[in-house]
Length: 239
Image 1 (cartoon, rainbow, N blue to C red):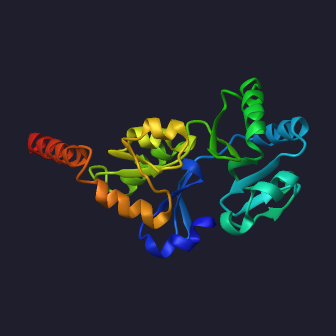
Image 2: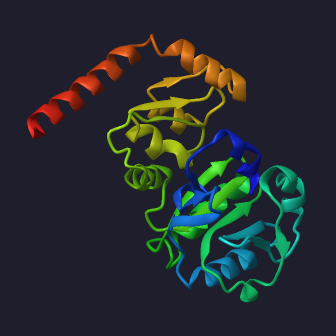
């Protein structure tokens, strides 16, 4: 929901839910997705019992739901920026759960990470920090690069050059696997390590402008040239 303000700029399906889904805003349909296991509701209950003030939002194709409006949601989650959510008992959310967003302070995220690692669910889901105050539970194996790979297949664009920009733990694999991975200036250290280079700016217009400026630098032009040479060679071998 939070991305709808950018829809007019995009003329193709979009990777959402940190790689758990691909959505086509033109047809208003999810065209590819992964789902959490039925045990996700029990994971939520265990987290609620262990961390009483944590904010929890469940994402489905139909909407976003929270059961209790905790102080953490009040402090760290802006519904206007991220999209409206409906207050609802989780047992009444019958459609497939795509991801669970945990909202709390940075210190508690560390405790939540350790807590989940010790549960029976540690091998059943993917866990990642997606922001300063956000920690997510995703379907096992879900990540942005996996979804981008699926989108390339759907769009028939498997040979296209891919530039990815990111700032958090949930972007690391995408930055590592992209033809060109870029971290913004205020990115988490793990994202900066994974990227090919780091931008000085982190505002929307500044990011685009600096990417354009940087393309001829830092051997990026050579990297793009080598990529296309490789594609040409592969094409010639197949003909």
